[in-house]
Length: 379
Image (tube, rainbow, N blue to C red; front, side, top):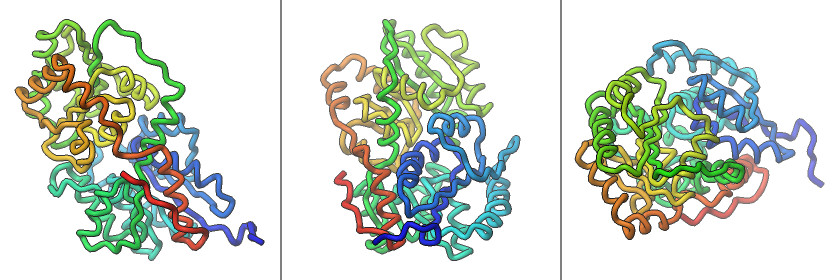
């Protein structure tokens, strides 16, 4: 007979600090809370604030501990130091059996590092993504590689991500292909989201990456301006990142442009609604590359490299960079070539099937000696 007493529970600590981490750990936390043998402890570093809080509200997640590290004009060094100083006492006090992190943020990296210093196993959700360019995306590519060295359990979203880890010398027995938990989140949220009624073809644009600040961002903005002049039946919807450099680049050229909506950052449900209603999407976001295929929306990736090549290979996404000419030509092609558009929109989602959260928790329980190894996601 299974003993469900408190002393036999395993303490699983989730650490996150940004909106994308919550959206991808939310389905995992839901599954963890359903397990009687797991005691969840949720720690927010508060690396971001407003957008993080929006996501917590949408998912109905209340952190047990909030480290509140965010400050004005923070940089990567200050974020790193403050997370170490504030997280280590929490880990020492609560002594989790495993720490779960997601993705490629400063929070994920530093939480893994602090756990390693204290000999606590780390489970890395969305392990194994690689661009193989240490400065692109920056600093995310480096964070992902560092975490892989530290992690005891590498939860790869796709078969290719698993192959990347094996090539780097990560033991295969520490890796499980789960699918990407963001697909779980998209399924869950989109079922209650209505379409936007519009007489124009909506093009969603999201751009914020550090490597695109400055002249690359200006190239994008000029491309958008040119496209609005070429096509009268399109409308750009552009949620502006909070970074002042990004805002100034867009506002200085597009603030008076017709059929260009420069809006405040959207909460996740609203972003899903715009994504679902879009004709196509321009983005430098990693998450949107994974989310948009669920709705059959072609994605033009505003980057020189991507650590998510599955969408490129399957044909639902295309890597186009940030040169004005490339952006204009690729958008124009999708607006005018129906067969090209249909080929991209019907390609399907290679990143998940909506059951990744369950696989992640079953893998963690297996690692902690509380169940059998789950089947892998066939990507």
